[in-house]
Image 1 (cartoon, rainbow, N blue to C red):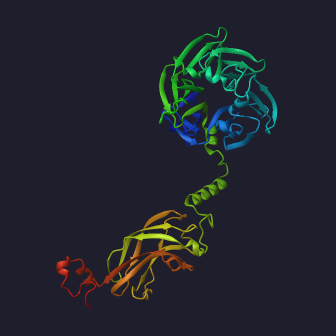
Image 2 (image 1 turned 90 degrees about the horizontal axis):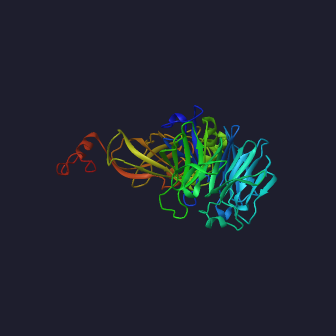
Image 3 (image 1 turned 90 degrees about the vertical axis):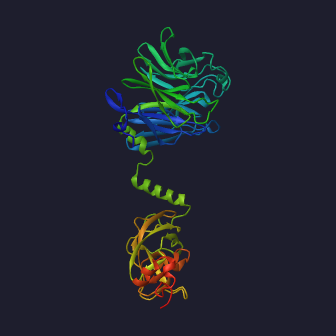
Length: 483
């Protein structure tokens, strides 16, 4: 998990360490949440997102959907434990931003329908504010609540759906006071993330790839910083300003992704860049560590449910339907007793001696294999007569425990202890698994074993077998020659 202590350079807000959170999207890369700081960001999840809003220990997150599915808007609410609430916003199309209200409800920007929609805490539509024009004609986006007033950005007051796309450089972008419909700021190019600071507006002038400060009275740009790309997403710390910079949608150069420009808060000089693994960044917020934990947990609020779902995912990855979800020592069904096994068995062994041989076992069945009572599963072996295929008398194989529970499709390696029989000759060793008091795996499926012929000799014969072939050729004690 991300923690301020793990950051190369902590982000301070009012002297307290915070974590930078980026909401990202992308038609090619997908999107999700990233968290970190000036030292770098890491992916927390891969749910494409747009607007973020922080209020009273809660974080609201608008999930993004492609334009062809824009009517399927969704909203997540997090507290410090994880997802607290989910709302499906049926009346909203192409949701861009969200703002939580004091009464537990929210207002969202329904960019696809050219309106703002107020929802109750229970998800019912309370009221609407609709701009003129058809479809996405104004391209409403970022919200701001300041001194009791609600503001929103727009790309311009157009009448036709996406007419703004042909007029990005016209200076038609504006900020609107929703209570009166008054345009309080204009002359912008695709504005996002408006902030009021004293007598000035600070916001992203996205189509020009810059951050600007505008005098509220004269509407003159008093300061700007060009950052390249599409500027969107803005967060302020004690010493820094963070600005999201997205890749160009029109060109989609392979490997080009979004970043976060780090500016000195006083001078606005760029002091660094933080790379992101997605094409676009939509919003930025700074959170204290306790709220970060909630975002990281997400829907994993119940440890038992989370563990169960993760276990199901492992079975699905192996392509099997589990007969049991958790390991146990209960008797296995025959179809569960299937393995693939290999072992580095020596060609010659001395009577009665024990050797350790490397062994790999892969679970090819549909249940978890575990060395657990009452019927533990062990790795073992049999000594067989190659002429009859029957087991040699008095040759019960030694047992080796599985070092861990083995899920379907998983493999483990171990050192298997094998003891040679007390009878000279050429015998077959069959390495397999056995569930005590139930069955040997190779009895149920002969393919569930590794078999190799081994020459078992007396000490003298084994010593001679180590001689070079030219010295061994005429020796009657050589293993496999003479009696």
